[in-house]
Structures are given as C-alpha cells and as structure tokens.
Image 1 (cartoon, rainbow, N blue to C red):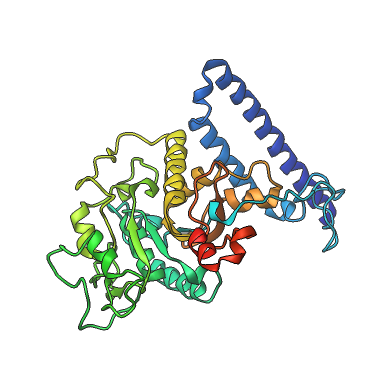
Image 2 (tube, rainbow, N blue to C red; image 1 turned 135 degrees about the vertical axis):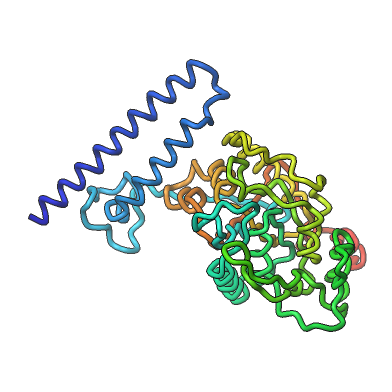
Length: 378
C-alpha cells in the first residue's frame, strides 16, 4: 500500500509539472507573438508563484533530485554523498578582488502586516524583533558577516527596525551624539560622527526608544550605531509598490526622527509620492530598479555591505542572476526569502566598475625602490 501511495504521489507531481510546462509554453507563445517587452508581466508572476507552491508541496520528492543528470528517479534513493552528479561540471570564474564586493542580503523580520494587519508602513512584531536580534548574534560570530562596513536599508519602518535590531548596539545614556529631539541629527552629520577615522568619538544614537501600541508597534529601547559602520537609507531597495498600505512609507522627517543615526539624504521627497495604492509595480520595473541599486552598490567604496530590504524586491532582483548555474546555485539565489533570512553573495562587475585594489603590488623595477612601489600601489 505504501509503495502504491508513493507511486500515486509521483504521478500526481508529474501531472502538475506537465500542466505547468504546458501553461508556460502557451503563455510564452502568446507573449512573444504580441510584444517581447511584455514578457515580464502578471502571467510570469502567476507562473512563478505556482512553481513555488508545487516545490513546497512536493519537497519530499525534490529533495534528492537536484539534477536531471543523475540516474535517481523521482521518489528513489538519493545518490551517495561525495559523488559529483554527472552534469555538475565545474563552472569556475576569476575576478580581480577590486571588482567584487561581499553583500549580505537580508529580508526584514516579521511585521504586523505579515500577521494580517494592513497598517501603513508596518512596524516589527515582537517576534520580528526577536528574529532581528537572533540574526545579529549570528552575524557577529560569523566571518565575513562581522566585518560589515555599510548598512543600506529600505525607508520602510520594518526594514529600519530590522537594521537596528541586527546592527545596533546597547545604548548607554549620557554623552551620546545625535540625541537631539528636533530631528536635526540626520544625513551627513550622522555619517561623519560615526566615521571609522575617529574610534574615540561618542556613540551615535542609531534608533530612538519607542513605546508599544497594540497591533501597531512594539516597545523597544534605543540603540547605538556600531562604531565605524555607516547606515544609509535608499529608496531603490524599498518593497515592490502595490495596493497594500504597509508599503506606503511615512514622511522622511518622521523616519529620520526615529532613526537619527541613519543617513536619509538619498530619500529626496518628504512624502511618499511613489505609492498611490492604485497600481502594482510591474516585475520588469522592480527588476530594473534592482539592477540600478546593484550598480549603486558597486560604485560604493565599501567592500563588505549589508542590505536590509524586502522579499519581493529581493526575489525579482536576484532572479536575474544564476540561471546559467547548476540548480543548487540558482535556487540559493532565486528562492523566496523568509522573514529575517540572510544570504551572503559575491557581487562582481566584469564591465570594469570597481574600487582601488590595495592588495596589488606591481613588482618589476619598483622592487628596487620601496617608496615608489608603495606610492604606485596606494
């Protein structure tokens, strides 16, 4: 009976996959006959969601079937550990270190919108704060996560609070920079005060203390910025614009008052003019916004960067990468983010955008002139 049930389940799964492939083929044909630029539309979104649902439901069948090149049938025994699947050939790449950065992509912790409350610019739930603190402990003990130089955060409250929970430190009252109540401590002033060039400066208040409001906001103490770490808010990594009020940000001045240690200078508008509540941002628009954001990341001087963002933004941005790689690699990049999940990647640019390579030594004639060698490399 058990074997028959297993066979029936495999047959059901194959039926789903066949129907999904037929749906995808028919949809692609229609799209290409109309306009190629319509390829990323709601139809693709529905297809991806359907695919994700099937993967979750039949995870037991997919767990050992990571490559079509293996001889293991669906539902069969997994291959022995340590044996490379037939089609998993190495895909090695080399890139000068000055053209690459380590980026830690983080989704915000659980917000009140994740538990069914459509609050405007939703805050973290108590569980969301716990998730953020747990991730912070993990990162502080893990290399290279402990060496973050720049934290880039979405302007949404749940992302800002997650950044404070992960990268903030306990705040000792008294002698704290940025404690003014008028909200004037923002932008370049906060960044300058927390400069890595002045390790003896007074701690910068990253986040002001907040009180609890039932089903709206969780009480939390104030947090200090980590010494030498810069905190920058950027609208390019905000969540996909849609109909939900949770994705409408509050005025810039209000966010800056709550997070005086964050540089809000890249958030140009006081009010959220991007969110209308009448239109869903297309997948193409989100992906393009993500590409623009990654180009901005590559232009930064820092090489170890954390990004605190949102599930849909991360999904549509990272889905543009890894399609040429083996399935475990592409799925690690492209799968949906859980609350407070972090994945670390190496972002590189073979087109030539990079930072000065402080590790490079020219050799040759300069070896006879150490001072010249130093000046040429630095």
